[in-house]
Length: 293
Image (cartoon, rainbow, N blue to C red):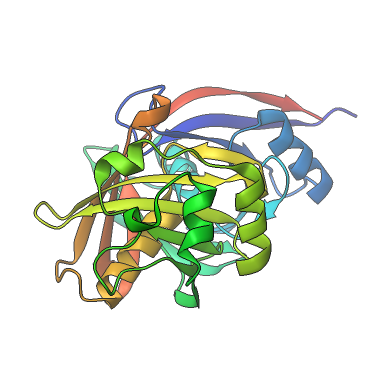
């Protein structure tokens, strides 16, 4: 017997359609098998697709899939998911502020939703606790993977490439000049070699402007089937964590821009609440339909 599941495509970190980072959002009704979830993500073919199962009031089990594998967490997909649930009435909008809980393979994480006159206005996604896994001392290999000069990598003496566990092991690569970030040429084979060496799945390159407390960034994750992302929440949170740990800034927030190079600009807000890092923004539902299995 054919089963039907409602699905959506929602652009995260966006204030209009066809910008930001799109995600698939599938309401599984609790009876979709893992194999079906993987195939659904492959069919939708976005950088991440979520498969949702409601556990209780304001508690959801969320599983995250790239086109090639399951991942522990994707913040842009979480934003797309909870924006969709809130806008379509699956989450009660009678209070201006509402906090719900998502169970993920990265742990139990809060999601803070702001409504205004029954409409969703902003969503904040809590990130898991982070830690630095590796200091990356081989700048030559990192530079070669992106056709950069070694001198273009790092900010001063303290801010150097590192691998951070933030739900998905990410190599943070600080870039001295914004123009260098815009002209990087990633090399798939060299990134694969670095991934094996440092056990990372994603590369997050960023330029930080201390005067405006903003960052421009690019993210590449070929190991999980994603070449360049338009808006990366986990990478933005890892960047914030690293810069704060190095006392680069004292503010409790940061704005990151991403996606201009691929025609899908994103604006990502990173903040800190009670010692926890949150990544937030707005989103837009672009499509919805029925998946038949």
